[in-house]
Image (cartoon, rainbow, N blue to C red; front, top):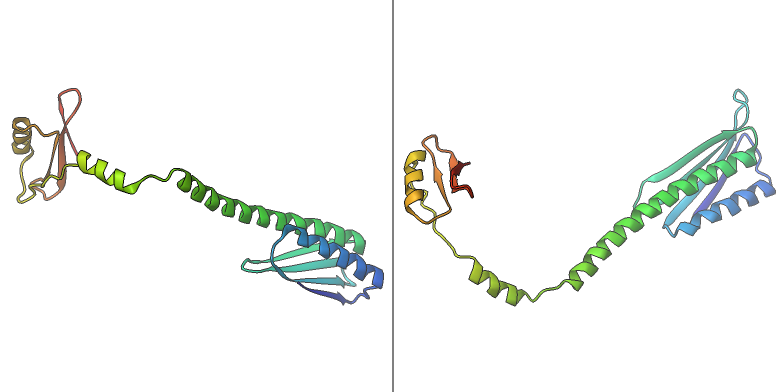
Length: 178
């Protein structure tokens, strides 16, 4: 992890640099691949107080930028580090949830593995292929009479308007049309 400490219109003393380094080292506890952390402390004559800005580059993710203004530089550093830790914790939780979700699916699939050959044989017994008679458009009444005469549960056909329709027997003995 590359660490850069910069002071604009302000001198960074050794104690401030040590405080920044110690604070930045706490960001590594989330086990994210931090490429670089840039800390810029600046002071402006027109605006009272100091501003600290952290730019954190995470591998494969967006850059996190935290800016904090306060009268005291140490207080600004502490507040900005807390905000950076919160952002990194959210990113870590988001990544770990996605990783665990994929692993849980793989574990469940392995636990519930089924002999595919046995399933294939069972499905062959249950599924009977049928041919559809979709040669010409038919009227609904004509298909209804044909369905009553046959032992089928449903019939798929094209109506006079050219729409594919399904006529089926309902449980109450009446017929439904899609």
